[in-house]
Image (cartoon, rainbow over all chains, first blue to last red; front, side, top):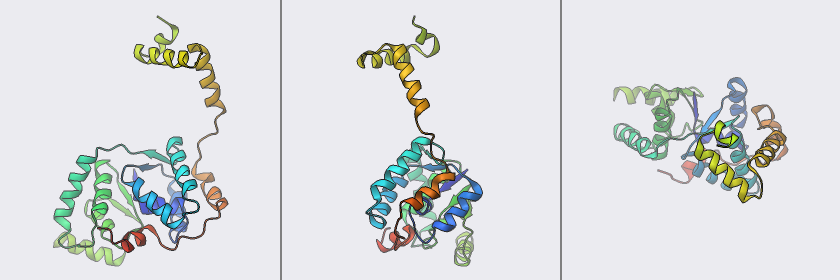
Length: 157
Length: 76
């Protein structure tokens, strides 16, 4: 059960510095990835910012794959419990990790609410992946040294 | 009771029959057409063909990853 943050899905459907690494993961694990209400706005922003000439094509591709069900499938979660869980995570962790964004916590909360075991994200620039690790989610790619340090401080702080 | 009602619940059967009537068809001919269309539809794409298709789009590498975009936008 793999939950991919939008940063991973954007690298799979677009072409950026993480696309090669994303491909390696896909080829090794051949996952069906959930796509939920948190992914849509971020994917839209990413496609229309990074690939404006092909944004419509990428958008339709994602929608077609979601309907096809082989690569993506709709993740249906109730927004309110996810948001409340994210709020709880933020209350606990944002005083020490001030770069932790609301959307980071929402993705982690969605993964927890959906019962996922693995959290896939390329966002090493916030504390999203570290937050996922605090919740016993297996994080891929593995945490960086800085994230490990933050995890240690987050767990003992 | 129609044959359709013996296969699915009553409400679904009635809705299907109405949808067929609205299209000027019988339930049977509508069902036949749906099955034929589904059989002719291309199979959903899998990861096997994903990268070939991505390559065919000839995308320019994005200047920023999504994580960098998030940071640049100052998203909180």
